[in-house]
Length: 147
Image (cartoon, rainbow, N blue to C red; front, side, top):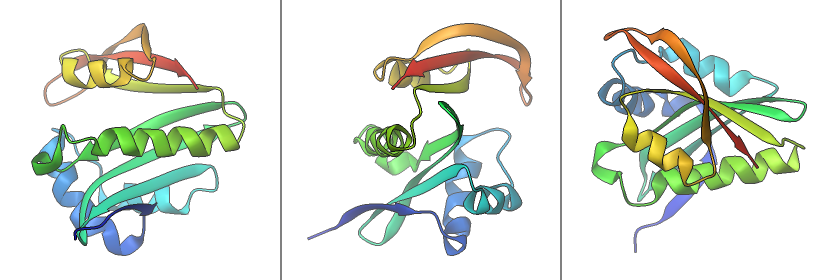
């Protein structure tokens, strides 16, 4: 029987993460960016693994009662199967234990699927950041959720 787990991100995960990152975003993070997240004192970086294969990841930073979702992606073959929801629930659980009350994130204005995903967790659009993204140039919605 296949096993599904959520665990801390490790340096050895980065090649698999980069495959998902490059296929998910037009301006992917670098390997160094993920290494930095693994080492952050006030960061939480998780991966989801199914049957030994890395299928998703998330990175969030926090300070005092606020947190910021920096990156969350799921392998295209495993989308819409609850993997993102499990990662979000794990981040929320850990952030609550650290005393966080608010979560923030940016999302492309055209990415209505991601917006709907975050809205299911109670996020709302608070403002618009002009030309936040490149390749293609696009505004971002700043979304906020209370946890």
